[in-house]
Amino acid sequence: MKKSVKEPNTAKWGESTKLVRGGLERSHHGETAEALYLNSGFVYPDAETAEDRFSGEQEGYVYARYGNPTVTMFEERLRLLEGAEACYATASGMAAVWGALACQVEAGDHIVASKALFGSCYQILTSILPKFGVTSTLVDGGDLDAWRAAITPKTKIFFLETPSNPGLQVFDIAAVAGIANANGICVVVDNIFATPIVQKTLPLGADVIVYSGTKHMDGQGRVLGGAVVSSREFKEEKLKPFLRHTGPSLSPFNAWVLLKGMETLKLRVMAQCDSALKVATALESMDGVARVIYPWLDSHPQAALCRKQMTAGGTMVTFELAGSKPAAFDMLRKLAIIDISNNLGDAKSLITHPATTTHRNIGQQARDEMGVSDGMLRLSVGLEEVNDLIGDLKQALGA
Ligand SMILES: *Cc1c(COP(=O)(O)O)cnc(C)c1O
Image (cartoon, rainbow, N blue to C red; front, side, top):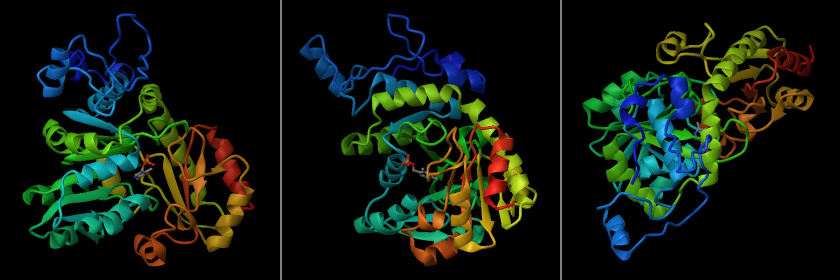
């Protein structure tokens, strides 16, 4: 059904070429940009063809919940970028997380996850999957003995996010994957904060990678989307049967927006990483800032590991104010350029107070365990002039 386009050459392309041309399949009109096939159904020349498409004997589209040419182009582009065998697009990042986890467990199974998790991922593990008899143990992602000790005969998945949201904790993917591989456990990595530009997790031993296209891939605040990157076997045997019948398909329009976003992904992410390092460095010497967390600062607790498994520090900077929540709210009130928003990876710099927004629902105890303090702010560094951003932060701190 999915024609692999110019397969032998595209795999050898450099990253930037893959981002601009990967997956492009032009129609007979020869359009320059990727075509937007805004259609849900497909017609057949005769009943025999329809029968063959449904039996799988003939490749071709049957229904947009199963696949659509614009969505395929997006999947191909990301698949090539990751150097993976397969990619499956979803309606959102959470649909990707849910699909990647739920498609491979049944009642009685067990998941071990790093406790530094995105709020909705935490909800899936601690309140949704348990309703179906799937339990989880949350561990300190940096404690390898804790990962090992949490394994039961029913453990099917190790799930981790690195750098984590919002604390930007960084965990050793290769070490965690080593433990999983030795025990026949599937490693699922949420690589959303790092982006596929800054961190390639397949070579480190990850089996499945989940993405939110909503974040850096769109990067301009327009659409929701997601994707699961995996082996062909995982996609065909586990993921596709689960997602096709449960329905969180990526809309062709959103796929088209994401395709155009991918063309500038590397340029945007690298520029945002450059600015993020400058912003983090400047924040370290600003009054009222108790602590700055950024993977490319020497002060990061895992600085050496960051440089080993990432190629830049990422676009997110987290910092803590000495004056706790009142100081954080006061700063947010005074910001003149940076917007208050819980989205991230955008061209516009966005800041959020995790304790009262993204991490509100998990409760005080879980926040304490994750290190999400009331004085913590999470900044997504955008594409504005970096000196304007530093100036805005400085004036908002009352300096
Ligand atoms: C945003 C995000 C998600 C969910 O993505 P959506 O597209 O919003 O569904 C999952 N994990 C992390 C780390 C995120 O930042």
